[in-house]
Image (tube, rainbow, N blue to C red; front, side):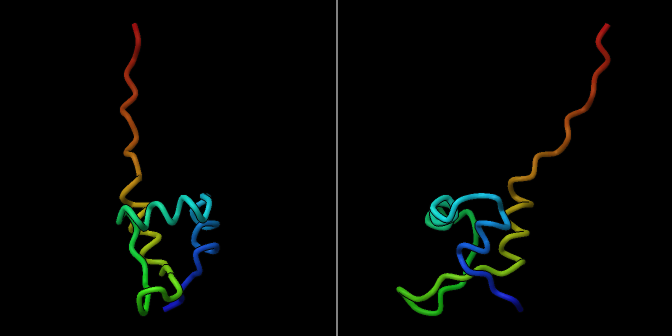
Length: 65
């Protein structure tokens, strides 16, 4: 399993590291941290699960008269 650093994960999501830290603090994205104060890392599964959570379904197109 490949793990990504905070900066790599932020780049993959198109957000800043600060925004990623906020998502993590609010428990909106999972992560690995081997011990308190240790290096924070993200897996592909963490990133994909977050993206699925924020995905919006397409809206139906209605005909206007």
